[in-house]
Length: 237
Ligand code: ASP
Image 1: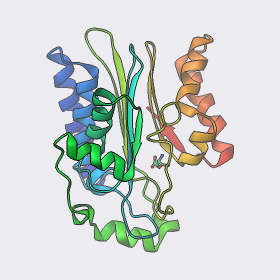
Image 2: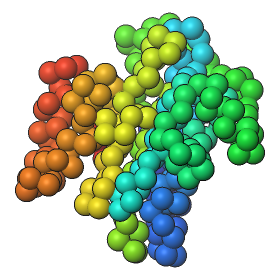
Image 3: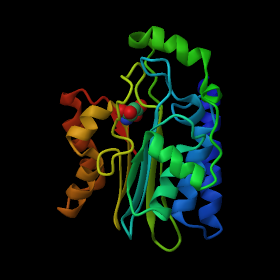
Image 4: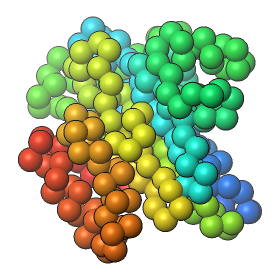
């Protein structure tokens, strides 16, 4: 399993990196890398998304481009194969930043996205995990950040959320400033117990700290120290 996860990460990294090497944008690179992880059942995003308490998958994703601070997000979508792609579509083709549920799926149809049958996300392993949530909680949200040759950085995050979450619960991953952030100096993607990341605006916190002159490593460590007391076990790219 560990090997399969490492292979998946390698493949995502190689794909994103080759886009950057050939002069592509950081936005294209992170989208391509995240789509590979969404298509891999070993990660908690897209195909491998965990079940909520109603034995259904509700997925969240967001994307942000540093220089322009353009952003897009979708939350609580259940029929989109690659939620990160729809987040980008919202960013580029609507006046909005975040769309949820049926409205987001309607936009997807209009944009020519293929809506998959919810069976596509079925997984015995994830179903078992739901039955024994405490012991087998699946983290593994996927995220990517990239810097391209023009100097633009972008960030993206995609997730099935927390196993056993209540239907309708939305975590930090699709929330710009909480789970994802990019500006002209830093691109951030978070993973962990989303409620704590929302309550601390965790991703944006790193940007604030850098603006005030803090070192990047210290900024990341101190942000994680802020989320920890709120139950925000997790990490950050
Ligand atoms: N942050 C995600 C959420 O709360 C979960 C995760 O990162 O594993 O939905």
